[in-house]
Image 1 (cartoon, rainbow, N blue to C red):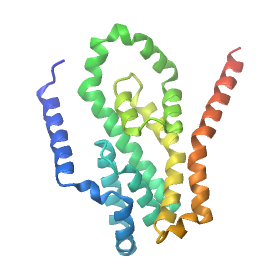
Image 2: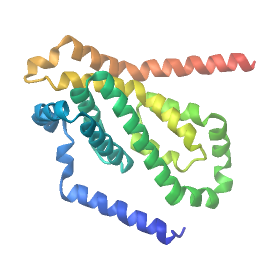
Image 3: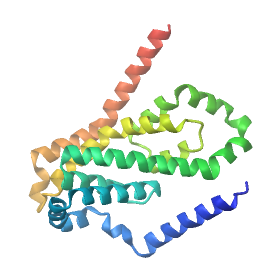
Image 4: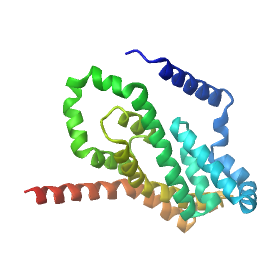
Length: 232
């Protein structure tokens, strides 16, 4: 499997960006501890530069998730801490979906087409399944939140699922988790001691996050039964 010079250049840029990220230890800025330390400064800046803060946040989140960099969780918490639970959830949802689509398209552009051509016979059964239930399968993976999202983004780029289907299924599937994380971010930003960890709202938000995969599985099972009954 040979890559064209354009693809080789893209790979080189991606490797260089990743190398700089880890060499400069930029990941230290994408932690909950750093969020708590700089929370007030971020809030003060947001009060006087709202559009700039939103634009910078979206840019950082999209780039980070497109390159599958660590820190997406902290960025989602930051959305709630800075912008509030609802605007924060909206911004994080848009940014995470665009970033995931960027990773998806990169994987498809770099190796997806080559793999489909090289293993067309072996992948035919899988391709048929994705053409029939690609959105449903992707939605299930997003809702269960068992497999890391960045792996899902890259693997989906190797399948025949359309970009439009990937977009809406990703947006819908990640939305419940993002809403919960954004809301939790409003609580985490106020934690100053161990006692604060036991606030009722924070406990309820963590319970909701724990129950989400179970509820999602039940909904998926109900949907399958409903679809089966309609076909029969």
